[in-house]
Length: 205
Image (cartoon, rainbow, N blue to C red):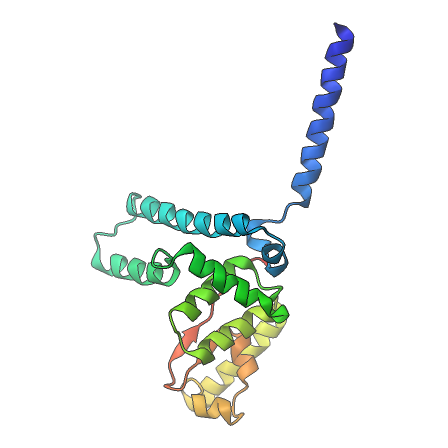
């Protein structure tokens, strides 16, 4: 009986060590990138997107039933605006999967995290400005950006503001009067109508 107990303890110990090793090798969900997507089976890809959409719906329900005062019109308007940026219910899982497959066919996108790629695909499906989409992709490709570089780029933008009293225009950026890359590193893009867009980065780089 003592021998059997020792054997079971050994098996249990071996199993725990194996599981700890497996968990140590598992990437954080926010770190999964194009390599993980490409190496996943079709069923796992479908499961990822389905789970992503379901998680968003759970989060929305949680917020609406929380103590946040969404009865206040200002808060509700802000919430609805942000929610519109991330909701995916309007798309079929297969549609998103197809877009993700196409996105990661470009090897330059392989290091972009899946959580970010899914929102680039959302932009593509919605027919957003191609220049904005291109800027968003380029911003994600250069991640992570050293904080010192970001600070330097903001200093250049602040100096421009101090001199001109405004943001650089689309024409000025095209003419090289203000660096497109410096603006990009500030997480910003200015379109042909001189509208300012804040770029996103959700993944962990």
